[in-house]
Image (cartoon, rainbow, N blue to C red; front, side):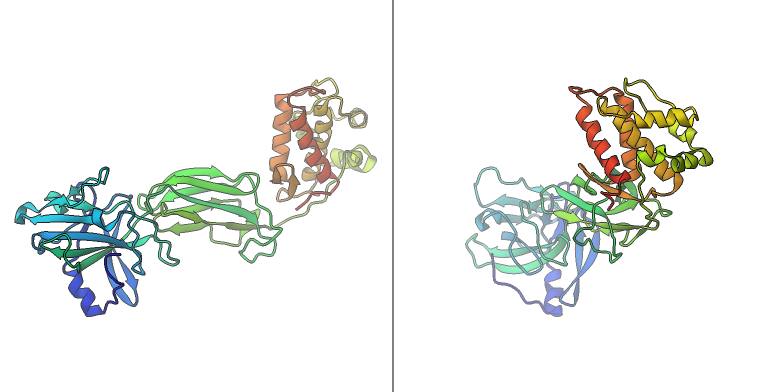
Length: 412
């Protein structure tokens, strides 16, 4: 720390602002300005879209030795450079700007940038640490000290400037989409993540979609690494099936500032989840529902197979259908999977299982429609999976999940 913590009155802050540095990029272009309120006073703040920020000295300052410090809002020094590597001899050449010579000869230090407006040189402020202050998203400030005619002279504070930026490390935004059973907006114990939901990252400065991802089996998503621009994180979902219990478009100042977290809560508007087994769909009540509902065509659309792996397309014959279900076995795992897939498809078609239902699987919570799709795709890829087949184990996991749901053992 170059000096003890400063307690600024409004008058002192105004006088120091007159000597404040201008924060620029490596080419000398000033960053756009916003305002920030600290301790009841409002200050100008540079909005830095990347990790490279330079301090261009105020032209009113005289030739001499100057140093900089990077603080957070509590005046804690965040610079990673020792004080001796932050001292410059600054020669004020008037219209030609400041010519800077670093007093230290330490190798590998950041190079000087261009001064404000492309005139002279500016001090590189990196590297520095993340602010880490709750309530202030990546707000730092650059302070300038004068040491007079000697680098060892007593440092005199001359001015400072706030800036908002990332912390120099790859930022990320991550979170989870979860089923909010009690609709309180918080993820409580036992509330599962929801897989297969689309989450978008939007650059709010340019109003463009930066990236789109899909939640994994645990409902998790992540965007990383991120730049330092402002962004919003948006959840896409079917409003006819779900109601959001949290905001679904969350704006973040400076996305790339450290590790950010945004969770989204949803609850099912209709959650009738009453599974019925292949045995039910084989008996008189089940077959009557199939016939009366006209569900044969829906079953033909599935990749159902028989014991030899040959395609099985229900023809409308109840006897044939019953025989296919009755003879199912796991010699060909795809046959057993087909029977449980057909039963679950009929559960959905008949309305006993809502498309909003979620089941616990070996891969985590899964929407029943996603489970049906995964099983159907697995059958399409490999219709014959006897012992030793490379795809048998994966098909067995899908069969187990559908079997449990058909028996009402794994609904969430």
